[in-house]
Length: 363
Ligand SMILES: [Mn+2]
Image 1: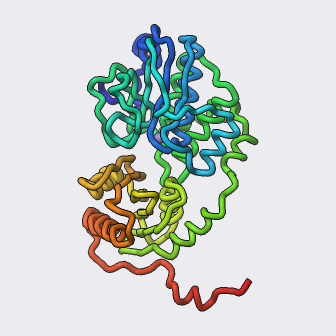
Image 2: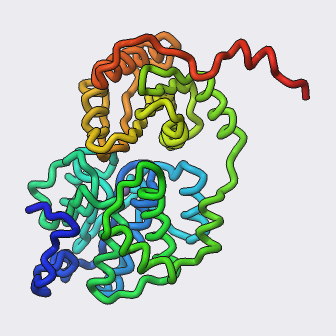
Image 3: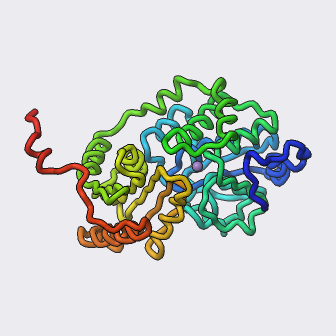
């Protein structure tokens, strides 16, 4: 299907050509709709599932299921599930019956990472905003707008097109999903994202949002930040953080976000060990950097990656968790990354360890 920018949506389009109409038309005979997304659910994937479930329940009137692929990791994301009282079913424990439909949000088949096996049940719809394309040729309904900041913004548009008022919980989920995608810097947002925020803000519960944003953090979070600071190296305009142990995979993205604030760099990449994999997260301030494609190039033949223009993530399985296997894979990734970014210089530590150790206060 043709990709159209949010701004170029013809205002004169007939009712039947609206995406939300076409989406709902294909679900008319559904007995139940299940929403799936990528692994380690993030607020954009959770919010999108919430919004679409509310839409389907309101218009089609059939039951819906929200799922999670693997654990919800980041403290804020766990707080979102808790304070919004969401019931996310583990995707690998689902059973299927006649009349089931599946919709994938914030991800595409065979890109990103998910354990939903579409040989179990063909996917009816894909609603996403990622740059890195998946296999969508066989999917009846596809709405992929790569210029839009958040999948939740597309979902909010569906609700407003259908005159379905979000509940407080749904509005809070959608708003938080959009905020996490476009709230950082660099801000990749379109008028469609701002329009969605404008619609959701008066409905959303600001106290619940505050509880989600300021979720309490475990001890290991601070240990990991210290590890990251100690193991960050500057290569020209890149800062690379090699973290020996990530307590949860989403921390790679938090570290990359944090390091990108450093005024001397315009790329921040975190490569951290989580279980028997390396988790990669890349951020850049450069518009048109195609970070998703850069990361795909870096992990080519080793693992998977995907993302957006200025934000990307990936995963490389380790052949073994021995120190030498980890170091070997980290240096291969560093070599490929420096090549991809055309950087040819030695790394400098962000923090000089000896000076820090000399000045450690006594408790
Ligand atoms: Mn997203």
